[in-house]
Image 1: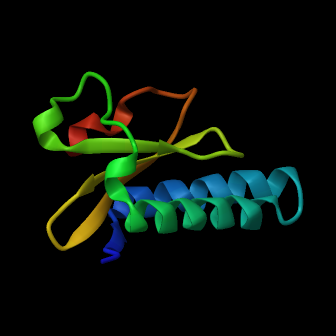
Image 2 (image 1 turned 180 degrees about the horizontal axis):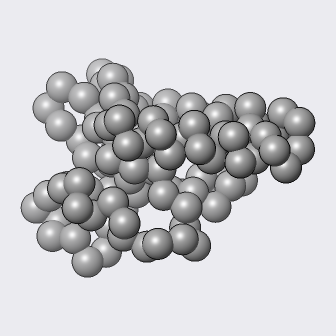
Length: 103
């Protein structure tokens, strides 16, 4: 069964900010970024336990991350009983672990 993916408000803001940043660099690059993130959501929804737990976070919290293939971003999420909750869309080179306060 594929679970629904739900983004926390902060993750939505990060998605929008990333798309805007890429779009200012090249026309349609922001659209490509959103498409890559959506593909990531589909992959996570179909097999959420595929990706590793985030290092330095207690495993019992179940926080995992999936690295995007084309863009330097990670989708940070937890699998809940009824859904996949996306905590953050984190740039892999900026402010590591900024999202940890959201746990």
